[in-house]
Amino acid sequence: MARWQRRLCRQTALCALAFCIVQQHLCSVFLAGRRVAGIGPKPTCPSVTQCRASWSSEPLIPTVRKAAEDMGGLQEWLDSALAVTTASGMDMEQAETSLAKAFGWSTWLAVNRADYLKPVLPSPRDVSAALSWLSSGPLALGPEELRRAIQESPKAYLRNPEKAYTDSLETAPEEFKEPAAFRELALRSP
Image 1 (cartoon, rainbow, N blue to C red):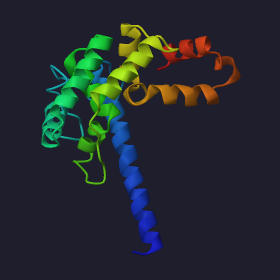
Image 2: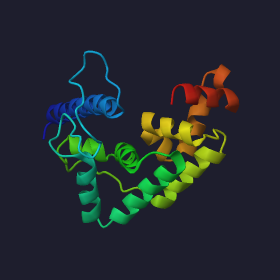
Image 3: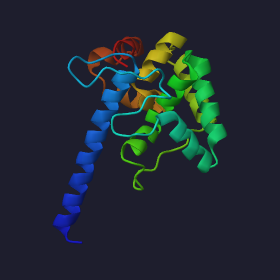
Image 4: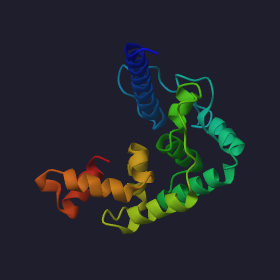
């Protein structure tokens, strides 16, 4: 394959991924029960499990559960969701939707189960450790704050939040270098 063909292929893949990310964000806005004025139809889904994303005809949660079962990790998936539910007060569907976003499952489904995307099964131990750190670490998030943060930015809060916190604190503007000020910013804009 010529160099220009590889570049074109890479650009096409990036455009497709950007489109999926935008679509995923719009769907998450709908799933959260909020509607952005003028964008798309009103959601008519009675629940997240029954809701279908605009890019796929498959329901998210049952599809992810089936794929996790095929990988031999259904119990890990459910245990991780239970850990999120216990720590944040979310219901199981919300917890599973957040895990799907955080670990690449929603994007994988959005691009029709593309082989080049490899969603990851969450480790219940790692998810529990992340939730414990978020609750007792420098952010000291309560259950309601934790729920909101996970719903707004699941990947940042469920996949190694300690590293994300350290990296963010290092690059934060001067007025947010103090952990208390950074916590306020994180609560304002998860």
